Image (tube, rainbow, N blue to C red; front, side):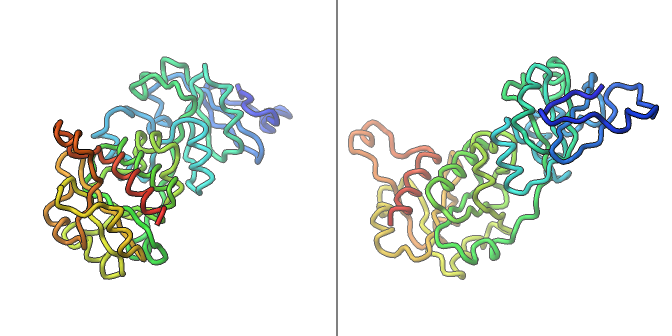
Length: 306
């Protein structure tokens, strides 16, 4: 049977006037603008739930989602931000214990699948405790040249592999007025579920593009007039604040992978190596750098202040 998930739900016209109704639980219902309907499904093997299978399997999901042109958003706040940013909704998934959360989703022109809590856990691989999940269609990415055409302040990420770090940097960049983010070809996906969740939807608020090639990636930015500042813990590098005071007309802050930092190639190609100064006591104790998210937050704040 239809389940009302919105105060303005109307009955399905196909159920009146002696029209036959489907006897199978889970039959898709038509939607009317302003009306949100749910579809009951009791089996994790139902093919309509395929978008949500094994969400904790990062290896599977990173390939599957890109190949199929989808991504998963978790929680009503993040979902509504994705919808507001123009990402089309393919479907939504709700555990029955969280059915009340559907009222916060507003108008959605896609099926909302309502499943028992144990089915949601078996399907996704974890206990879904943030309410709704949504499968959304990806939008085509701009080229790097298109992305940076009107930008003045950008962040460039080289081969970051931790999705949480990517999401957190997007949140910092969006909050501190960065115009765009450029990713190396092997950088983690900003639309992977954990990236989206950690960013609290900031991945939808700041445009980004992925480089076509790594070797000459910084060269394209420099040819467009960007001054590339490469973050490094090297004590011989210029403090980032001083480097920004020299020239901040068009600046690209480059950050490297979590373990090794920026590659030797990108450090060589950058206009200047820059650092965030550590206190002498910290250095004496062997602390020579911050993690990449903290470094990005500080550097973006300094860039915003110039």
